[in-house]
Image (tube, rainbow, N blue to C red; front, side, top):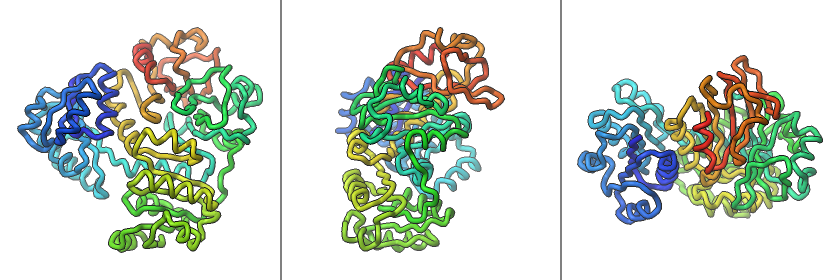
Length: 449
């Protein structure tokens, strides 16, 4: 497939890198000449130096021949103009745009009413807020993801030295009852991504992902030594950008007392007009004296959502030391994620990976429902529907010759039954299958399914 990407930032580079590995022909339009050189050195991609809102630049990038268009510049105005130009200059079958504005719903309506074809508008702030709200009341959980319309849950956590299962083999955990709750589908150990098998030993510091059924989620938490906060009463939010405001709005609906710390006095006034109940504090949320004065000790959750990764990390470490029960940090640089987790910040959320996940599902082969990337796209979870033509249908899982770098985490039958798979189970046509795989195994799995 010929794919044209507007913008050459880190998100665009991640998307392009994955699409190239899938055998697609990718062209990027980027205005910064230095960034163009970096992209050419980094990727096997055609780079056009120019403005993505320029018709002449897009014609040089062969927009008329593109089968898929993705607008990922840092400017909403440019992304919108790119889509407008594409409605006339291109016959692409798939069109995706990222918008950061809080008026995103108005833009969705405008596209619908004007008939400008857009298959997907990505609004990272909404997706980030959703991921934060899923974990905000579970102190030890890093992330919670849904599959099979919520019937299958994936949660992640850090193995602590005091964890009862630290230094145990997975087969030993299975014998103590883990198999009844779910399976450990992935492990991130330092810079290494692992699809674990029975003999793998869980080490302190490992970041593990556990698959379970929806109805077993709370029981799986307890089995792994986690406890949900019965009531979330107070939350501190550091940073008054869009994502912080959206999280605060959702927490207000749950009758949670929210304090937002913002350094810009003008921004404080704006936030106070938008939010109904939250307290807006003009001050530096990385200042220990201010946090102590505002009674950070025992706060249910501390959310560091500023635009600067270093500030978010330092503030999270400070809040953790001062007694916050749950700490969340927004991290833009993907290479920071392993380090952040080793520092004890259990929940680190990347806006860039959110966009990558949404885009990848549009170019997968087969009947793919969802794709989720982990860290620097080292591993993925993929949910798809097995067809009668698949090579795996009807065979026992123990007889499948799947790559060692993948594991089937759950099978959901058309009637809604969820199977945490064992060797004697099999995949049937129409099943939703959730599997987890390292980057190098994806192409093989796609051919199999």
